[in-house]
Image (cartoon, rainbow, N blue to C red; front, top):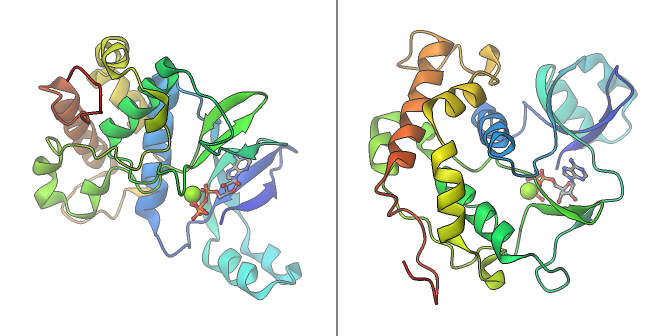
Length: 236
Ligand SMILES: Nc1ncnc2c1ncn2[C@@H]1O[C@H](COP(=O)(O)OP(=O)(O)OP(=O)(O)O)[C@@H](O)[C@H]1O
Ligand SMILES: [Mg+2]
């Protein structure tokens, strides 16, 4: 669970802990995929860097949160907190086929396994859908030597939270594929903090890791995009 914190800008953020069990890679995916989604025009809340002083743990009464704060001193990732947001439930909300298609296309691009109807990681705020929690995407970065195979891996949309809304994947592909360029990937990768990349085994520098992410995403986006899921009633 993220923490709810107030930043020194007096705004509230959902803080993704750097000391959480999922580790740094989850934060890298959160930033890279989240910024990519924003660049593609999808409704991902603003992402920020949060410097957490672990001394704050001293006045935290809950022991588990105290430990989380101690383990997460330094740089963390924050998502603008959406006050009054509801968790999306596919049985309670409607999503139009065009938006469902764009979200599904994006999830297929980043290989997001965390958007099932059981755990959609979608919020509804101000009447609209918001995309959160991309920490479980881009899983190739857990094993760089096998990363090339990931670029062709088909996305399984069987359990996807938006599968029931007749996602218009063909329209999404027409709209988003031309935007998914090396420049756009590089813009998103530039926002990954150096601190999360500098000790990646097999890479000489944070920029070398960023370049590897960009190459992976370029290879996947360039096509043939047969990693797009096949949907019932879909022409693909
Ligand atoms: N930016 C936000 N604004 C409002 N609520 C949020 C925000 N981010 C997260 N939440 C709330 O916290 C919950 C968990 O957030 P998130 O999915 O990012 O964390 P998680 O550690 O993956 O938790 P889980 O394992 O439950 O998915 C969300 O379902 C939502 O209720
Ligand atoms: Mg989640």
